Amino acid sequence: MSYTIEAPENKTAIQHSPDWYAAVTDLTRYWIQEGRSFSSGEVAGAFRIHRPEFQFRVGSVGEMLRDLFHNRQLDTYPDDGYSTYPYQGLRIAQGLFPERTPAGTEVFVYGPSQEAIDEHDFEVYIPIPGETVADYPDPDSQAASVPAPDVSMVISGRLATSDINATVWNDGRMMVPRAALEAAVYLGGSPMHGGDDVFVSQTGDEVVILTEDPESDEFKSYEVWSSGGRVVFKSNDKDNPYPAGKEFSCKVEKGKITIDLT
Image (cartoon, rainbow, N blue to C red; front, side):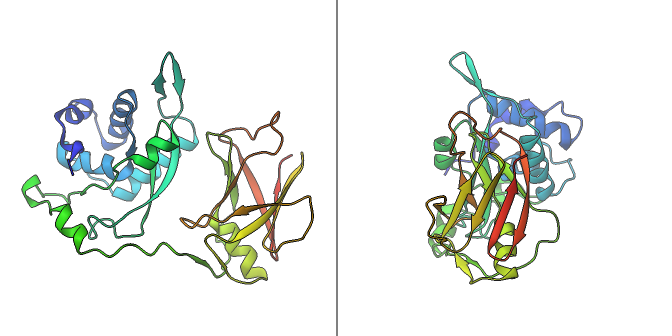
């Protein structure tokens, strides 16, 4: 495994950045123009290597990237004279560096397409302040001792601590977060697992998601993602896709989620 975050070009991209906030924009702009995918861990790792004076939390880098993505403030990928806004995809860490990113950890990866995200080698060692390249562990030896992650997932039910919103991804798919299903199960229903079906009805005004099969032709089944417990679907009206970047409020009841589209 090569540590591409060590490349001197990455140092050049952020050598004049006044702080880590500006460096996030500068580095991701360079990577996007180069057509490469990236994760917040890679950004943080590059900072620790090339700008060790920066003081930041790795989690804060991830939060900033998510905000930039959802506010459509990232640069666009060049594509044969056109431009493509980055996609965001969820990956599951194998645990190559278990002291930094344990097996089974969900990681957001950004890239020019879902295929590029799926193929991206996103697991890197994130140094702690003061470490050098010589201190890095060998990923091959660590990976050999790490069991395959158990990504099975149970939605047993819990109430959300804040409002729940469904978000429309860049490709027009609406993503209903796990928190909505957790709340629907908590309010009344059987535990669910990744891979189970939910049942979705779409009209011009609302989306209704049920955890139990209503045996109605108005509803179409969608699988709960094993990685993360999300439900993802496109508009059933090809002439009226969901607007990218839009968020819609979720109303949760016993075994039911209603999304107001008005």
